Every structure is written in structure tokens, then in C-alpha cells.
Image (cartoon, rainbow, N blue to C red):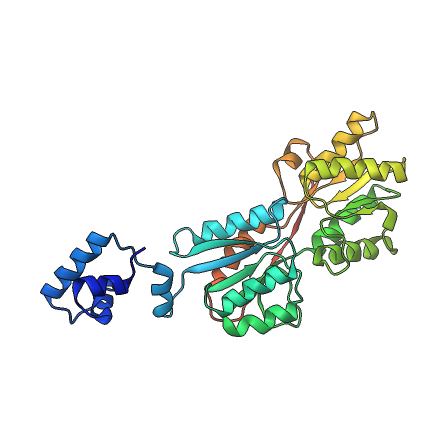
Length: 312
């Protein structure tokens, strides 16, 4: 692949003169410009746009750190980011992480090297303190409440919707509730919010035997129902982290001639509409749009959206 030095050598002009032609700058004679452009055409030279942007202190890449895309949370958030970025002139670069700390830190190091204008962490494994430390090198946006950490953030205020959902279940006088969530880690913000709301309403901790993490899909919900029914055959109520997951639970009960359980989903997917099932809308598409907006800002901002419990 030809370089700017090859053009200079073949045209007989200096590298700086070739550079001025490539960047459409002044102070180049017509004769020099014509000769250099002829060589560029002859060598089929294509400029390195990334190197050029960096030389001018510019970068049009926004990195989106994405653990996976197997859950509607990430899909809806990413759709919002893409929608906001479409007419901005910026490029969205997807950065898969699988919650690997080494991979996440490498993306932060790339921000430090100016490979990205900003990073949006849809979720993460590294402590927020580490993310905060890298804000000196560029804008970082996290999609959760950053608490005391000085990081720009956009997130859903989920507690009111979770409280409303558990109040609804309490009004139905359910005795036990299966909790199907994403990461079964005490440090997961969703896990903490759900179990905290449960305790406020029922004045006790959830039954650990009726809690399963790692839920992403219809198939996960189906398998989780099988596990929980084996542990508690009378279980007939599930709070899940996705409408499709709840649909998987329902299908397991139907396939095994069990009564259709009381179900609450999340993310306002098509399945909750078709099954007339209660759900929680966290407005993740709007969050994604706002996350992109914050990524372009040089200022520290936090923006919270109220989640909504929806009964059919």
C-alpha cells in the first residue's frame, strides 16, 4: 500500500508539500498540485483517515462497550444510540466485553490513546472508580447511577416501578415468587434494586432457592421454570427481567399441564402485549439517545428516567 512518502519520492516534492495537497491547504503552486495529484491517481493512494483525524486532534469514533446483545436491555439501548448517531457524523464502534475486566481496561487504554472520542459503558465489570480515573483522557458515560463517582451517566430510576410491581403481587396474595434476573451478583445494580424493593414490600429477603441469574432469552426462562418447579412444585408466580423470559416460563407450564402462573416481565416487548402480561418499561431506547448526547459533551452530566410499571 503506497504511503505519503512514496508520493513525495515519485513526484519530486517534499512530504510537507504532499501533505498540504492531501489536506487541501493553501500555499501550493498549481504545477506542484497537478504533479502530486497525478502521482496520487497513478499509485491509487487512499489516505488514512484515522491518522489524519488524530493529526488534527479530531476523532469521530464513539465506542460502545457491550457485554453481549442477548437481552433487550442492550438491544434497545444500542438502537437508541444508533438512532441519535445517525445524522451526527460520528461512527459507532461496538466493543464486546463479556464482562471481562482485562478487555474493558484495554478499551479504556484505547480511549487514553485517543482511538475514541468517548466510551459508553452499557454495563461493566470494572469498578466505577477505575472508569472515573480514565475520564481525564476523554468522556465516559455509564448507564447506571454512578453514586459518588464523578462520571457522566444516564439511567433508569427503577425502584418506583419495582415497588409498584411487588405491591401488585402482594395484592394478589402470592405466597412465593420466583425471581429470574440477569447477573446473579450482589453488586449488579439490577439485582440490588429488585431485592431491595422486594424487602420493602414483603419485609423479608427473597428466598435464595427461588432466585436464578443469567436470564437472557425465552429458552432461559423455560429452563429456569423447570428448575424452580423441581425445587418448589407449588410455585405459581414469577418476576422476570424480560417479557420473552416470562413467556418461556409460561410455555414450560403449558407444556407440562401446569396452571399458567402469575407473571411480570420487563422491557415492554411484543410478547407482553400479545400475552396481556404486566411489564416494566425502562425507556432504554430514550436512554440510548441521551447516552450518545452525553458522549459528545465535554461536561459532567447525570440524567435519570423514571421506569414505568404497566398493567394490561
